[in-house]
Length: 249
Image 1 (cartoon, rainbow, N blue to C red):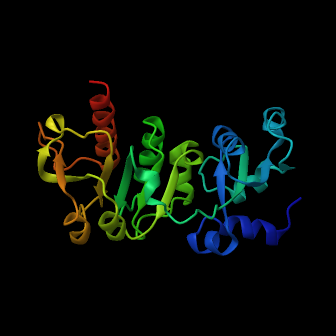
Image 2 (cartoon, helix red, strand yellow; image 1 turned 180 degrees about the vertical axis):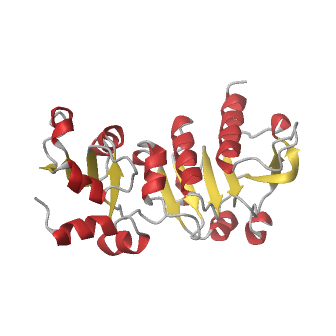
Image 3 (cartoon, rainbow, N blue to C red; image 1 turned 30 degrees about the horizontal axis):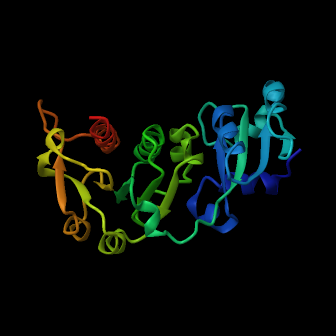
């Protein structure tokens, strides 16, 4: 049985301020929880209801498990229809970004991404295409936001997400910088080469001026219809697909 104070603490992890204060975030759903259990992340506690007990007991026994009622789990959950399992995961203390780890591969830079669903979808896309690093501007949505975590479907357990000053990164890294811009070269004619940084901008405003001026290769996805814009998560997936295709030509 969880105390009221402990329930309140777990509920508070839905908010960025308290995630930072306590150093934990929540993961919901069996598939996502199992991904984190089998990752380098430190799993503090897994709470589950009797309905899912047989599956939970197959997970690593090195973890602290606690059975709770569906009513209590519903109070903790950020979902309208709660899953039967919630894990409390320790927020990792990522080392200072080593620029050498970006060489000989592609990484994604996100400039002011605000929508949790977009962030989660981008992380999941990066995982699909084998992209190890996503570097976010400090004003981007928190990757441990429950909606972001849910949208990644467990991929957050495998993709390294960093927050830093993008201008500083772009100024110091000696790599091609491909920016998603409306006036760029047609993506289907672009030679991406073997390595580089893919920079995607804010949903409404695109790339910030300070980041835009550091892009040395503007690239656009040509519009064939009449839509005003393309969702940033979809655009990122197209970039990743084209980069992968170019490697196999």
